[in-house]
Length: 571
Image (cartoon, rainbow, N blue to C red; front, side, top):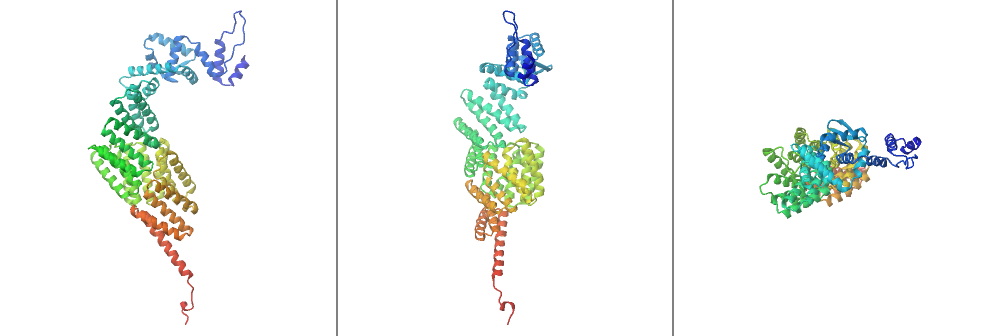
């Protein structure tokens, strides 16, 4: 028997212990009093199931309720589920279950299963209806014993209310728990919780209150989806909120939903449609300053995407001045104090126009504000924006330091939506420092993340900057290929500024390859686009490139002119 047990357990100590326990608890004599070899269960789960079957009915009820609470659980909550029993009886059952090795008590108000598999088997054997009823009872117990501290236990209420289908309580708890999770930058957790709240709304009777609750939850959900790169889902969510607001006939909520649609359209590479939605949102604002700011902000972002950097910067400056004169820490459609996010876009717009000193000054203020509020996302974006400004100002060594900090924060907090921009700018910076292997790896990460996330805004810039990096590394044919692709993508997503950058990158690569006529053509096209978008750096590169081509042609013409005797002073 010993050999059979060891062989069946395959050396697993817990399995072996449970098999031995099962053998000792099994009656191995028949009606005639003869003993026989007991049957050995084939799996550890079967052994545990047999053990649980041997419990008396009262102990079984306690174990199944504990299994619904989880592997580790509060005795206070478990006791509240069995509030009809006397305390002495409950404690006696608990001692018995601990003595048999099913449970173990760690302190006066906490216990756990002696092994996670026991909890797993006990819970998995519960019929669906019984599971639902148990979780519903747990919700009722939580509401009774924590009535004065429900905010602290909102996450637990969400979990059990979802499984217990206690829709009213799930809705209330999801709002609290989701905001708490978002407040600590746990956006994946927050989005999951808000989804539970939306599910609860869908199970409640149709009413105006239910519609209002679902719209508001979708607004909360939207702010958690973007940082985790759920942009296509965010657009669908905002669009659904817009439809519900129309059904409700609520112009205020319709304005916010339309503003969020504007933002999401810009992110998927539709800035023209975004500007239309932002203008519509302004029509619904009707004196609501927060909605007005949000719509103007999203319109400024769309203007940036289209290459209208000057108007974008003007709108952002006005927004910063207005907000700081009234409520400097207000959140107006942003996942943090809005003045921080306004400054990020202002820095980028200024840098694209070549206003290096102003953009760096704005970045310093933004860094200070982000450190003061100490929200991980704000700090991540502040370091990104400062690095962007420094890189475009020709200060790559300084840019590298702050961009590495941004990337570290981004990875720690899983801000996937921002990782593409950070990898792009750090890759661009490292190429200026000659660190091509790491630079190329970062560019490839950015491009891969874009194609998988659906956030195509600035994809053309990724390709254009990667083309420039290839040019610096001497890979001119690849620089031409990437530039041509960048021009195509920029046209597809209405990004004139990025088209200018891609076109000048192509002209420079062609010039280096000796394709003079084609290089001149693309320099002229880039100069036209750069002038329209007021991009001084692009204009400078075009003029320098064209001047070099003319100088090279002049030198070639002189070199090819025959030197005659008269030309050297012969009589």
